[in-house]
Amino acid sequence: MKIEEEIKQPTFKSEYQKAHINLIYTSGWVQQAQAGLFKPFGVTLPQYNVLRILRGQHPKPATISLLIERMLDKTSNASRIVDKLEAKELVTREQCPADRRTVDVLITEKGLALLKEMDNLESGEGTGITNLTEQEAAQLSDLLDKIRS
Amino acid sequence: MKIEEEIKQPTFKSEYQKAHINLIYTSGWVQQAQAGLFKPFGVTLPQYNVLRILRGQHPKPATISLLIERMLDKTSNASRIVDKLEAKELVTREQCPADRRTVDVLITEKGLALLKEMDNLESGEGTGITNLTEQEAAQLSDLLDKIRS
DNA sequence: TGCAAATATATGTATCTACATTTAATGTAC
DNA sequence: GTACATTAAATGTAGATACATATATTTGCA
Image: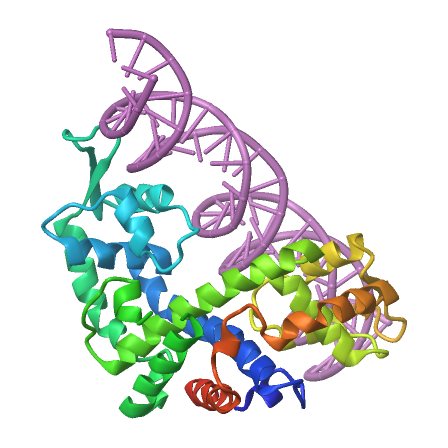
């Protein structure tokens, strides 16, 4: 459905305003679809993203700083996300001997197994993104990259 | 910057996965840019969105149900957002005589004045969206509409 | 060395959100 | 008209988030 109908606003001041509102709206829409998919697995989106980063590093550990740097949502609190993951035994955390300020965070076998279960979610299936053709998906990425440039 | 570099993930499983992650990431990026712009005006994004809906209805009142219906986040608590807006005297709330279960929410002159002040933010200025050409912005809207279809 | 600055992480706090429950009013079946 | 279901809104609560601050460790430099 067109964004005009979706939010019942027939006109916009500009294509920019329309795209802007559409971006915010659609992203929320996608996130909500995704939250529904995640629920059965007992992890939130930020937790999932941290697990993915840790898998990318595996078997090397990651520090909290590295997580903050790589996380999609820079402002959210990496320490406390790791707290939650540790409580679920999906990661381990221990002080790094070389620099005792830092902490080595490692994904556990249980964490890897969970991600493996969740891998088919990564395709974007169920989040609407597959309503696009592959070419359109690539075009979308290009436009989004340009916004952040 | 390309999303691959941004989150330091050199490859994706598919264009779909890449676009999906890019959408989440960019939306967060835009929202954070926007939150910065909003701060001086003392309203959050959800509060602003409710005010916009109320302006769209003006001078007719809106019920809480209508707000929930139009807001993206259907589960979020419209009552409490209206609480905040009422405390700032940006809206009024009174029981509807025809159906005493419902509440008529109306934007005040002060609320309209605030939105007017904020109108130039709506152009997308400062949120990166104007890094696109007008044609690209329109293209982006089309792609986002298709995702939600 | 000794001490300030920088760095890495954790924590305190207020606010926000999701989800469930509660209260009140209306609608409907009998 | 009474009883039960439905609807509208508000509220209670747990958990998450944003932002500031605290604590510990390391680094750099006089």
